[in-house]
Image (cartoon, rainbow, N blue to C red; front, side, top):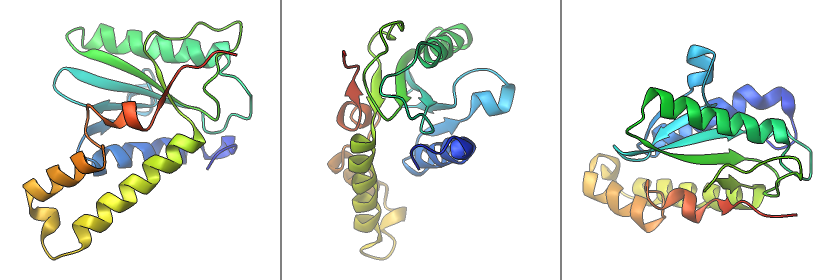
Length: 167
């Protein structure tokens, strides 16, 4: 739900569950330890998505404090797992950085339009696996559907998130 600050905890839990549903190790470090990102998805053994959710924002740009928070979360991961590459991801209603903010290098933004595409892909993935008995238990079928819908660790955020925009 976009624009509802009071639902932030629900959004963070939903993202954690989405990560688990797609087969990623998915945690909420900020909730667990009081520090770190809202969500952390292990996309592979060597790469993790550091995800900050700003679904409650109603601003036209990504504010400096939100960008600073994402940068701090990337540093948190680098301090705790220096051997892992961090992919910075912001879930925000807009992909434009405020003039006072500094974008995190290589970051991706899940906007409402991109989230809608992701939602459709996840629904199609689940429907394909539910189309016949025991498909959920067939690793090859799951792997094929994840790849077909671009829901794998190497495709998800390049497909369903945009690069940082400029004003």
